[in-house]
Image 1: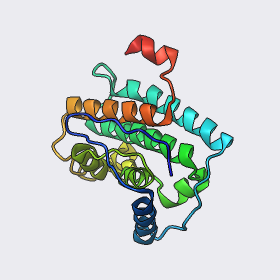
Image 2 (image 1 turned 90 degrees about the vertical axis):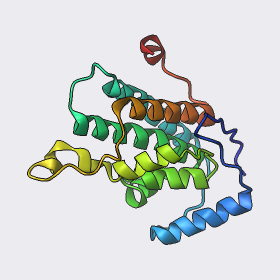
Image 3 (image 1 turned 180 degrees about the vertical axis):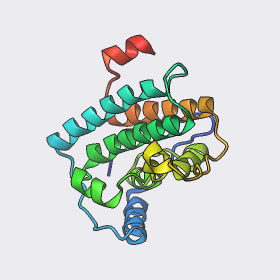
Length: 189
């Protein structure tokens, strides 16, 4: 069982489930995504990597600021990076191996969110889930993949909506993992 205390926002409510249903949910995800089941075991290495991923997510949040350079695809690509770093921070913290995440989750934020929630993350936010689906896999928003192709559907999100969803997700990850905001980030927020 995980010692994780979820928080809630107006639209994003914590999931409440027993450890048994978490195991069943994880088993279902492993089947759905044809992933190798893994024994979750917290380690010092995982905790350190988790902290580093959270800090990197904070750094990439700066690229979502209104004054940041770039266009809409750049913004959504950076959003995908922030979301994946943040969610992987939780996954690594609770014991998912980094190599497993790279192989079975990759750049799919929707999968990261599903695995996180199945393992005690407790973040049931319909708008975040919808954004995760729009972004997945987030490489599709990289300009190199948009040459001579139409832009993928953006789900009708606005930059302000995306920023708000990402900040709420980051705050939840910080709360669940216990990682503090970096001093440099706190000065800018």
